Image (cartoon, rainbow, N blue to C red; front, side, top):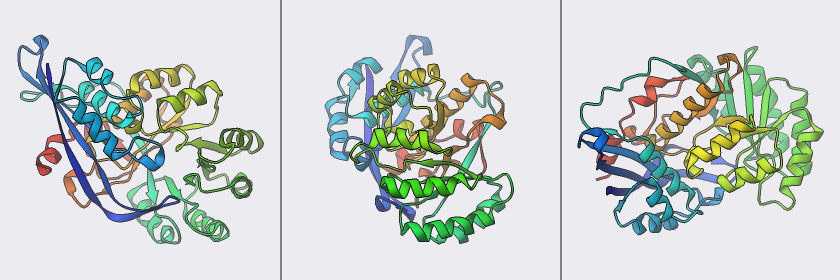
Length: 358
């Protein structure tokens, strides 16, 4: 039997995060610790770490449902399959956390895994920019750090004002820089068409993320129609709140960008295998989870790029340029920079945050 422990957290952000869904000033969730021993480890204690970080307005389970699912495990499981069989399918964040914990099992002592000597060594990262006019003051610092791909939250203020800010922002970017516009589903079709038409004339715009919310009437048909009518790539984000959503869009033969938040996907292996077979254009991104969930997501991102085996120039930047995010330092992932190295996430110390929450 494997021992399953969990601890709740409520961690304030260093700065309020503004999106089309409103202001966000703290993150809540659960850290998961799986402990046991196997014959293969010679009886040594091994530990795995995971995180369940629901975002109910995004389409995940609620925090209360996640807590109930974790409590229902009663502190133990024979293996991952046994644990997942006792967690409802709709609790995708809990399932993702358990999968991460079992997938990351390692010896608690004497772990000499270090940095991998083969495979992808680093991946580019997009820098997150604040909403509204604050973006104009923030972008210079990101440029100085070396970022060349950026993500700007739109759909927060008046569309006409944001379009004016867009041109000012693009004027600050050097040649070759890319800008992602994340609307968080804030627009209706008329406003989305206005932005897509503007983006078509601005080649620095890499894609527009979730222009129409999944809850809007006829959203799937509208998104597919927009993708066919405009040359600018459209990315799905809120439309991909779980494995079932991925399956639905695969069935619809979506040829745009897929923004995946691994912390929300449930057991990721089958989902990523299906996307790989479809040769999907995937961007891995943060769900503003702690360092524990981020480690699992970054591991999946590196594995995905190794599977694709394409040149670095062809890779889309990861959506993990969010740190330092939390006021509590050990909750943050690797310091935000234009690249994340394999060794950065391999050396993440999940136990440090676990101990802070004790």
